[in-house]
Every structure is written in structure tokens, then in C-alpha cells.
Image (cartoon, protein in one colour):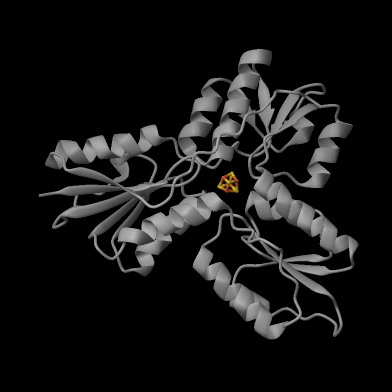
Length: 307
Ligand code: SF4
């Protein structure tokens, strides 16, 4: 018997769903082209879908005609970019996730109170770039313990610690604990900066990772929360794939396997997961079961209003 086990929650979080809905509605209301800084969300399929509707993903403000409409992506946006867009007289709408905006606000508050900030994240990720832009001098991005080792602050310097919303929960806990050993007085935010969607999807994947023989995560390689799901499998020495579509499953990947565990990142439409399931069913017939570890029922309405 071949078992296809599917994690829930998986796929779109409520804020990704909202950002995608906003861009779709703006294209319908105002017509193409609509510009988007960066990718609206980190998913190849979604980006291709919008490119076919003539959304233009570009951070190059120079090349964008004055008076165009620009949507700021779900990852949040650097304050200097918002200002530059204003200076260019672009009409804008912000599809940033409020949980990312919360971290921007925490950073601003700490900076105002003369803290320096250690921000755990990936230096090149759009979200980290955006948060750091609040104060390039006083926000330092660290990715791991070695980066914490290399920090040196003047004695008595007030320090605060923030992090990217889509990191590995376990790795982040470790880096925070390590930073606290070095700087016991470091101030932490009241609530974890790792978002509920990232936490829930990681908890769901952990649920069966020790009881299956393979893990398939549907998601794009540049999606932070998707890569962190695949990492859970790799760390459990489980053959693990991170794929955008079923044609990326190597032929021999599922040899000798009876139970395959499937999930997807927060920017992945469920239709892509269903394609993978369909493909697996076409190989082995079906026994499919969804394992629910948490309920997510939020829907966030929006109004299209340009600034
Ligand atoms: S994954 Fe988390 S941070 Fe990213 S849009 Fe969803 S809720 Fe917001």
C-alpha cells in the first residue's frame, strides 16, 4: 500500500491570499501595466500568472513611468523605497503583511529609544532588507551563531533583538539563546516575530517526519518559509524535495517508499499540491489522508485605495 499523507495547515496564509487578491483586483480595476516591487509573493507559479496579466515586477524605479501604479509586495518594503516611489509620483498600494510591518514598527520604536538592533534573518531576503532600511547604521543582520560571535558593541549599549518572520523556529530559538548568553540584557519583542503561518506549517511537518520515508514540500526555492519546511526533513535524514511542480520529482525518488508526507509553503496555491497528489496517484493508485494539526480560519478583507 502506498500512502499519501498531507499536512494541514499548508499553503497560502491569510496575508498571502490577501496580497494576491489585491493585485488581481487592481489589475482588473486599473488595467495593465501594474508595477510590483520585487515579487508579490515568493512563488514562481504566482509570479508567472501575474506576468501573463502584465504585472511588471521591478525594483528599478528609474524605468517606471511617473504616475504609474505600484503595489508593494507582501514581504514589506524599505522606507527609502516608499519615499523614492512617492518622489517619482507613483500611485501606490501596500500589500505588505502586517506581521512584517509589526517588525518594522518594533525596529523604529527601539531605534527611537537609542537601542541598537540585532536582527536575525537572511541579509539578501526582501524582508530583512526592508527592516534594516529603517536604520542602516543601527540594525545589524545576523544569520547564525557565528555572526553573533563577530558582533561587538560598546559596554552599556542598549540592545534589542528582532527577527525575520519566516525563519526556522528551532534555529531562531538557538540563535536567540546564544545572543542572550553573550548579551544577557538584550531586549526581546513581547511576542515572537516568527509568524503564525510559519510556526503552524513547521509544527505540521514535524508531526509525521519520523514516521514516513519521504517528504515533498511544494514551494519555490526563494521562499524562506518553504525552504525551512524542507529543512525539517533534511535534518531528520529524510529524503526531502522542494519542488514547484510534479515534473521536478526525480524518477527514483519514490522507490522503496510506502509513505510520503506532503506540505507546501505559505505562498503556494493548493492547486499545485493537488497536481503533485494527482501525479503520485497516477503512479501508485491512492490512499490519501490529511493530518490536521491546527485550524487556520482567518480571512483578511481589504479595500483598494491608492495613495
Ligand atoms: S508567511 Fe507569515 S509573514 Fe509571510 S505573509 Fe504569511 S503571515 Fe505574513
